[in-house]
Image 1 (cartoon, one colour):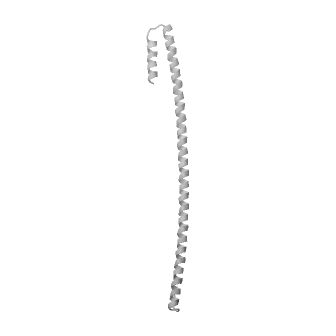
Image 2 (tube, one colour; image 1 turned 90 degrees about the horizontal axis):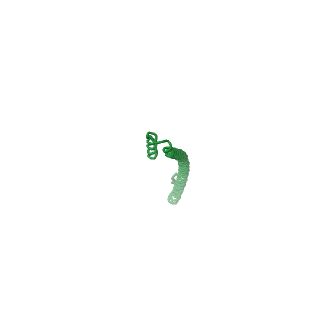
Length: 121
């Protein structure tokens, strides 16, 4: 931008001053050349910025989708672990019921030894 301002000053000075056209033409050509070069650079920079922004947005969308996929996977793993925990608790309850029945059977056998008519249910 500063370069453009400097060349604009040169352009104004050359057009305002009473320099013969022969002397100002080479300078005017150089200024036009530099302005065209600046426009080309600005266009390429804007194209580069648009490409970076579009790739940036695409990368952000990819990251969001990847995060959602990872979240769903973790949620599925959590649900499966909860089901396994419920199955384990059910299995432990079954074991406790079996243990209770075995303890009751042992108590009944011990009671049968001492008093055959008395039983616990």
